[in-house]
Image (cartoon, helix red, strand yellow):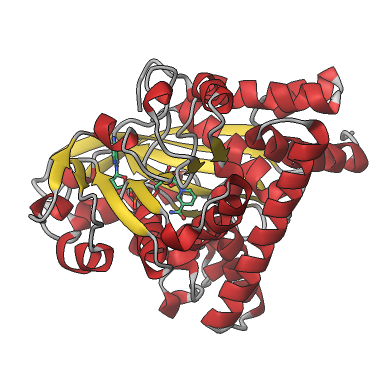
Length: 417
Ligand code: NAD
C-alpha cells in the first residue's frame, strides 16, 4: 500500500458521499463514521530459536446493527489500526449490500509471514486468538481468512477458541477446512463472485466476457481463482502478478498450469518462462478489457489512474482504488465495480458456512455456488438500478444501498438506553 494514502480517510470520504445522497442525519453519520469497538493487543511468542518476540495485533468491530460482526484476519507486515478500521467499515457496507445479517469487523497482526516457520505462525495465531477471545464468538464476531491467512490458520483459531470455551465451536470462524465444518465452495467463493460481477458488468460496457482480455493483480486466493474462472469462461488472461512482480503474454497465460505448477514454488509465477517480466505499474497500465486488482489497497491512485487502459475494473481486493482515482476513471468512462459488491462472494459463502455450522447440516457444492451466484446477481442488479436512479457512479450506488440498510436498522432498533 502506498503509505501516503490513508485508507480510513478514503472509507470515510466514501461514506460522506453516500450520506449526502441519503440526506443522512448528522448524528447518525457521525456514528457510522466510527468503529463500535477497537482492540489493540501486544503479545509475546517464543520463536523456534528460543527468543521471545512481541507482536502487535488489532480487532475492530465497526457496526453490529444488522447482526453479529464478520470480517477476516490479515497477517501482513504493513497493517495498522486505521487500515483495520477502514476494512471493518467496508465489511459493514458489504454485508448490507448483499443483504446478509452481519455487521462489519476486521482483525490483523503485523507480521511478515515469510520470515516465520509453520510452528511459529501457529503460536502467533493461537496467542492472538486468545488475546481477542473476549470479542470473537459464534454469536458476536466471526473471523475469516484474508491476506496472509488461510484455512489452516482458521482451524487454529477455531481450536484455540474451542479450548477456551471447553467445547467445539465451528461457528466461531469461517473459511475452515471442510473436515472441520468448512463449506464446500468457500475457498473459491470470492473469486467466483468477482467473475459473476464481471460477467454482469461486461453487459453494461458492451463487452463479451468470453472474448475479453483480462489482467489480474495478485495471485493469491482471490486473484488465482478469478483468473482460473476467467480462463475457464474463455477469456484470455494476459497478465498476472504477485508481490514479487508481474508477468505478461499478449497471447494469454496458461493460468491453471501457473497455479498448479508454479504458485507453490519458491520463485512462484516468476519461474514461468514463456512471458515477459513487467513491473506492477506496467501491469496496471496494460491494454486489456478487464482489470481485476486482487492484492492490496490503494493500487490505482491519482498518479496512475490516467494510465489505466482497461474498459472495466472489477475490484477483487479491498480498497484498491482511491477516491481521486475514482474521479479520474469516472471522467474517462471506465466502469469500476466496487469492492463492497465485487468481492462480497467470500462473505456470502462464509455466511453459508456459519449457517451450516450452527445447524450441523451441510450442503453440496452445487447448491452453495447456485445460491452464491443468485445473491451476487441480485445485488449487482440492485446497485445498477441505484446508479441509474441517483445518477451516481457504481461505488456511490453500492454505498447508498449499504449505508441505507445499516442506517435503517440502527434507527429501527433505537439508541440504547
Ligand atoms: P492472499 O494472501 O491469498 O493473496 C494476496 C496476493 O497479492 C498474493 O499473490 C501476493 O503475492 C499479492 N501481493 C501482495 N502485495 C502485492 C503487491 N504490492 N503487488 C502485487 N501483488 C501483491 O490474499 P487474498 O485472500 O487473495 O486477498 C487479496 C485481496 O482480496 C485483499 O485485499 C483482501 O482483503 C481481499 N479479499 C479477500 C477475500 C477472501 O475471501 N480471501 C474476500 C474479500 C476480499
